[in-house]
Image 1: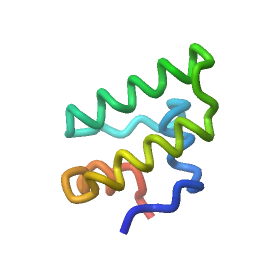
Image 2: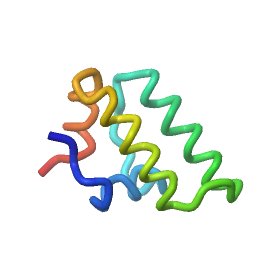
Image 3: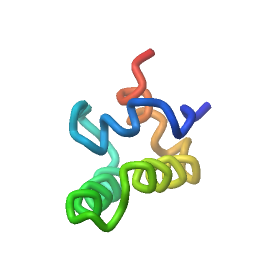
Length: 73
């Protein structure tokens, strides 16, 4: 089951406070795109977090290993 969008790890990932080694290139690209938009002020942290969560929710099975690396609890 995918972690709630309000979990701290989503924000930590976007703010680069945690840097797990992600296997999926598409997830890496989405994450980098959101980080750039965040830095440029085009998205708030909350908006970026919600978009990342929604993206992972659509592809949860494909990103299972990466999500496990992000949420180690």
